[in-house]
Image 1 (cartoon, chains in turn blue, red, brown, cyan):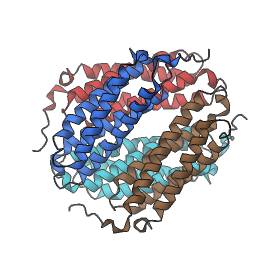
Image 2 (cartoon, each protein chain N blue to C red):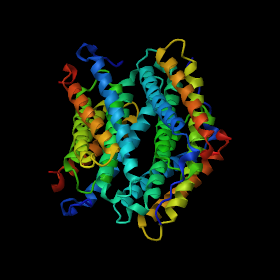
Image 3 (cartoon, chains in turn blue, red, yellow, purple):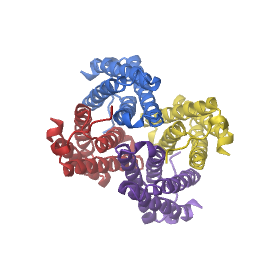
Image 4 (cartoon, chains in turn brown, blue, yellow, green):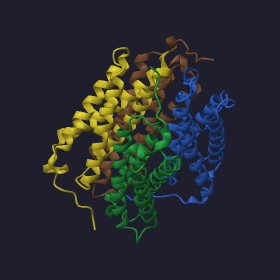
Length: 130
Length: 130
Length: 130
Length: 130
């Protein structure tokens, strides 16, 4: 029994590529924000931000890899991963926004998280994932 | 503004530790299964198994790290990650079960995936995550 | 005892940023090549390529994160990681080159691996790492 | 051209398995130490420890995966990765030892790092890697 790949007509490859990119960019911005927070004198006030950044970076990296591997099999698996990524990046956007006035790295994380959440939502509207 | 950590009375630490362990064990079993599948003469029949294994390994590793970092903040983030991990490991259990009669590494992955899905479900019943 | 950060005059930030980018790009190209190989009818001939891709993707992702976190402490740690990344990406370039005539994804991996190896070599010539 | 796997008579599988386990255990101990440091009131004094922990966790996870996938091909790749892992875990042992009197999580990291460095050194003495 060789694997069967669904026709990909139900999946706009541009939407997929944009989502992979948004997830990878978010992972990098969150890792960078976590590390920059570690270097701030007020690091003790930024612990929750750091932890949320690390969670978001891990989740986004996983989502990017899963989405990159997606060939039409197990759409429910991909949907679950993207649902989680959308929630995690929205929570991380809210958390990093608390510090975005003071730190450019937090502001950058907010932007990347918001774009990631939006890209996951767009991907979840693709017919193949409904 | 220092971070506030919720009292952890709503979180059974044994349940948490068991879930972290089950996720890490599942990640290792799935990575091992993917690699063993690559070494089988019938690798062309195992491509979907390999891809699902890799997805599951990534998701489980992320879930283990997120759960390890959990201190009571953002329970909705943790819930989303565990929901995804439960779905992914259940799908991977079904996928690897298709080959479990022929390959011991697939059988080992089935077992690890089922235990991981059950551990995530148990963790999701902890009051702190409801 | 608060951590002491060395003056970064011995580290050209452009060289560092280029190396981080080359490592991340290589990780993505190698993961993509591994997955595309899995989808080829001749997957059985591509197993060594897939394994080397996965090794290289892991090593490059680690190198990118380590280099991103580098603030002047423990240069011997960073040097060891970059040495390894340079070797791994050079080996992966050689491996993927074997299939580069047939598969565009292997050719893309060759290019990304070569650029990554060169970027690591350039970074290793920075005074802070000598 | 199907891949050729060397006879593994030059590789003691117990040594390999012990090394994979030591790397995975070290990654978990270092991630746990980094996170516990984030929760300490003196987090500002532990920033270098946290960063080194994160570097070590990434490197050890990569080494474990590379070693798990090793089938005799490209021993120079595996040697480079294990060399790096041995250096990184030794540096991390030294760094975490600075705080080992005060924090049990740092002491646990010291032990895991030392065992990991020793396991990598033992693996590097296997004939297949010379």
